[in-house]
Image (tube, rainbow, N blue to C red; front, side, top):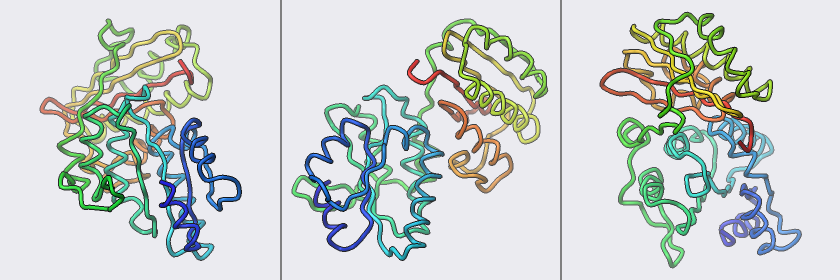
Length: 290
């Protein structure tokens, strides 16, 4: 990472380090003071994939507006090795091959092989066009898949452990108002931060609306709760959004894209699961640190 960042500084290119606290501290110490590298808190930046894409695009646009013709960014994406579900970050790693195409960005995505599970490393090889060899050479990844091929075939859905218990709410063909009314009492147990709970309610409203308007009946809503968390799934018998990047960008190329994007901004976790029996969106709201 050090040659990557320092070569960028030497070339007059904006060079940005976006790591969590521990790794950022290591990078800062190795670079020393006044390195010319810009440091951004990765713990906040990489909290949610759609928000990370939005922040990246705002940052890249600002650099380009300032005259930059090449921008270097490196940072660590969360994964199960550090306690974070992988599915939506796997989607992120594939999507970034498209969503930054309009910007002159050169990205380096390091993964610690001591902590990243084997399945994560396999996905990383399939979502990056190149890998860095042990001798520092940049070589094509033989496992690489185009983003849409990866996103439609290779991302297993994650299930929250709370779903193994009986649901607190089970609704058949609810209206958005029905869903909101049924979920409101769960806040008595969850005691979420007000913004977190309001974000979940907006996201569920959008999910149910999408299921009714763009999916196929019957629609089923299940919800579970415990102190600090609420998990909601909405299932219809349609195929789900045609664009596998849906939710990570504001609109996508089909209907319902804005609602999915809002959910990705507002919820602690969002899972999209197309299958032979229909499409399920999983929405999780939780108190940070719970």
